[in-house]
Image 1 (cartoon, helix red, strand yellow):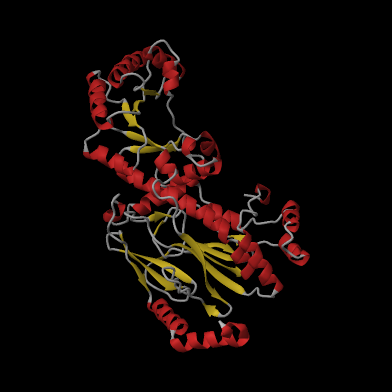
Image 2 (cartoon, helix red, strand yellow):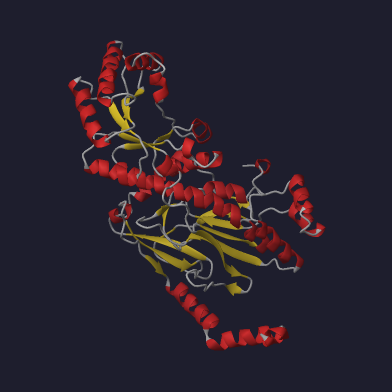
Length: 468
């Protein structure tokens, strides 16, 4: 990513107004923020951290262009001194991050950002936009892939994604989550994801007969083609596919698969499998689509469906029915020390932290330990240096490497967490140091004397309040 990509202005206005106020008041001490997700959607067992590499690229490439500064000037909100400051703004701090593809859980940081306050604060909106969306889709895709196994899953989400960016980053995230390919050609080109596709019903309808259509398609693609067989009658379509498969076989080619896109997929897959096997075509696979999700796929498995692969679109690329995840970016430490938020239902753990993953003797994950960064604990630390002094120190990892790492890590999770109706909760424990700090700050901010003193100070400084 370069500054010319125009991503710097992908922010909320309040990041700039806060920055202006910090600048005007000379408040630019070192501050630490952490990005974490508050809670899992119902029946989800884990998240797959995604978008991390893109987030790091964003943070290390922020730069306000002349057109950006002029636009902000026209808003008549900011002083020329502050606009000059923005012109030279770039991130000079440190970022520690989990490896992209890591299974993660609520209330543990995916990123820890430390730097001059205005720089670290400015990153919030874009980092949340990048990581929340990709983590949501990667996690949803992982659930679909788990339900389908050992059958494979292809991302069919392009036409139902909410715009180009959602289609592109969604395809990327779905691949991290375990999909083997995407129908999105641009995503294939830009990310190196294998591309896969069939043909539409309109192709079949464009010829006099279904058999003519199949012959025409396999004339152009004689090896490993997939034929859509439900335009008119699925069983007749399967028999027509058998005719073409045998014609191909006689010429030294092979039909790859047939695709079901409607009807009772479990029942039809069994009938089609028998038709293919009776025709001595055991190598021809059956793939299915039609508004699928992890629950429907699991049910197909329970019914003994003979399906080798799934094309999943709408419900994976939009993560239906989960509209968004509750990723947040919170101040945890600054020049005055550790910070805690005590808002009802939104309490945060104070201080710069590290996450340690503790494994059982057999290699499976036992629990995570959330600790202060100054503590040294047993387990594998998940937050690794990505940016030091504003410079990237971790090499951007190839997407396939991220995917392979993620699948291997997910395989080490307790089986109960991988269930589509997960009720088991992974254990996140607190270190003694973090527990003590949390209790101390909670007591300090909530004790009656402190509250009374705070109210008195407010009234003394603002006498009119005493009249309310």
